[in-house]
Length: 639
Image (cartoon, rainbow, N blue to C red):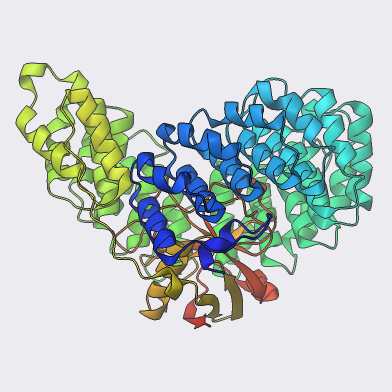
């Protein structure tokens, strides 16, 4: 079976593989983000495997014109085709309406799961009863329905907190299968404690102390915080003593929201926890407490021999708006992580602007620029950022103007955009121009220069730039040029499908992942290509969030960098379980070199970020990864 054939075999019957030529052609159409009409021939082939692959590609295009092609595929005689089409409906504008229609007649459990996925991706109050009833179905469908309800909770959909729904979710915790249990606990966490009836809240509070699954216990801590229906103090006291690190992290995060007579006493042992993630979460929690002496609790940590603890204490003190002298922690002899924390805690706009432009290290420049996004810099400050030699800082300047447009910035923005090929700079400067141009009298607009800029940007290889250019073109009343599609140079799928695993060597140990070229061939190929050119060697994990993710792949070391190009998303219904390898994004189709591994199940990431692998060895190593942990080598394995 070919790689692309495996795509639709994950939860469906297996068919003969499509021809090599068909698979390659569909992949190329998907990768270029061509109009859905380009897939018409494949969507109507006699071979069900070709139709199935075309259905998934149609969804990944995320274009309304795909809907007429997806509707008959959602009714296909073949269950595999229907499953792919069902998932694709969730990625396609207005696709949820078709999913609702299909749920009334679809009998296949795997297809129903994908239909529930689609409803979750397009949240609406009209879906709630369907999803509630879906909780009583087979485990795969029940999990999908529960995650979808969690997404409705995240979207604050009216009615999602009705007792009929929260009680039905709580009832899922009595199931034997772990997948729907965890999904239900996730949904309860996303909907929130205020929705729980007193009886349900009391039962869940007891379950925090007794459930055999630590993932469920951690989600329930979040679900019950804050709650007026249970003794929150007793619940967090039990959670803070839990043997599982994830539950202790959840406890630390819950404490600032719980009415407890002495939260610092509960946090005291967590501040000394042997797990660095738990300790970091506890330090952050202290910063969020009200009515306590933050300096008394956190100042001793400023002398800790571990610079990461010092940095966390600085951030917590800043969050609490407590007294802290930042000057000493910004000295060049301080560890980088400490200096970044100090810069990120500054409130002086002028000093931050100077650091953003003149800082000698990328991490300092972007820390300063990032901090400015949360303050109130003047137009003069933003214009000064536009002159920065660091593209990421200049992009922040444009972003500030986009959010607070001023016609005086027009020429500076135009100059920045005309002189750059950087994706971030172009996206933000075009966005800012779209905000500023309407404020300028039509006779004063440099129409010719804007037209030339838009024409050039509409031909940019990266989709986010083209999208912003199209928006500006529409604003200016310009006729968009005929799209010029430059087919990417892609290898043969038969070569990509041979890439099966990766060994990631760090300075704290080795991690192994099984790669999924069957699900995400472009992403796997890109990852392997970067690894085999030593791109990742020496890079540091720049983002570590306890019980959430570890992230690497930024050549700048600050999370703002990439390889200089973007790759298309390859979204699928594969879940973000513990140890899932995903592609980091800053928006649709913006992946490049940054990737992450999850430290616990994260259903809210499902179908939002490309899944391209799964941890197979080294879970204990992941727990030792901290900001600054270095990748020594990544070895790609083929068959």
